[in-house]
Length: 366
Length: 209
Image (cartoon, rainbow over all chains, first blue to last red; front, side, top):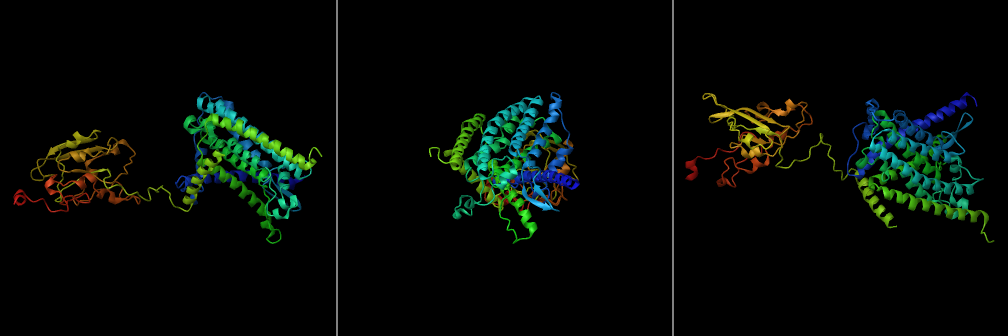
């Protein structure tokens, strides 16, 4: 570890940080534009070309706004909550690989914040910490609407975290069969999705199907997507900040830059969740790079492009669903979580365990 | 699976509309300051105090409009005409004429009450003000010039539609100035506010002949 290594580490972190902020700016604008399109409206089109700088303008406005602190707040917790929302949101993405490792000056640089060997656990931990921010913001505001929002956040997070974790377990177990032993590292999970199903199963006719976890774990993918929407508190699961009943929900008493931090965290989480879904199910940055036929720079950048394309495909589905579905009632939310998703995830986990076991060890009676 | 098919049904609607809007069709928003929606013919906009073709004010200061106004936003004070330099035909004229636009509900009862059609409504609807005093329109702002044009509040505004003040509202358009049913079918109203473009009504003897 010398100075250059250190520099590379810093550069990786800064790049991830910048990527998240830029992507958030774009996503807020993109969502408003797409939802507007789906509602026969025009959407933001004043700031910059196609209104693309709208979020920047909004952010700057929020930055200079007065930060109102109500008298009844629990000050320490109240001030801590926005940071507790943003920091885990930023950290979660650090373990997601967003491109093929590249070689700079004889060193292999993985395009990833850091490759933790417990990457998936880290993601689950961080997204749970993010929920604390919502709970703490709701409780410390000393006002009834934020409190109700916070209580809902707790219940919702517990309900959907379980389903999400179970669908991840199915992926991890499946990944273990694809290589040498089990792994929780996201870089390794992506690496094991290289190639095609034709090669993996020895059936040349299936050579055109990429070896993504999506195909064997389709049900887990569906459960993961639904749970991800609920985890990020987005419509139709946005009971935490249901405007019509709870004003702004947990962030009702926040203004100025503190509100902006909650907002930022929400949109970073959307991107991160889509990126994780891409990594776990859609093969991460895997994709054709046409090595040798195109310049080396292009084939080095292409994996990142594939990663972004897949991630944005999922994000677009999020936006589409948001523009379409009405908010669930609270009991419907709980029933979907506990009576459908969690049993469904369990059944799928057991099924895929049995199938994997039979593939590994053969039929139990032989 | 019923849920899934219903979900897909909903997604198809938003998806279809989204794709249609993406190519720029079916968008209902009009970019207002740049483009105006066509206003209905009988749109009730800001008032205007009319003049006769010879430049005389139509208002006779009778205060019937103020009496008819349900919001009590009109204040009129009449005064006697100077015999050698009259403002209006007849004895009296509207010396003070003020309308408080913060109170006005644009019902046009004043237009109906007016015996001389001195007050009519136009299609101007942009009346934002920065103080309460500004919201009280005085006779200087409401009265048309002797040449029949109406002073526009923001004549230099590139987005302002200057023709709005030229369009008289439906009540005037549908009624003959005399109010006489004998003139049904005869065009006794005009398309624009301002001096009448028609010939004066024939006198009693010609009409009876």
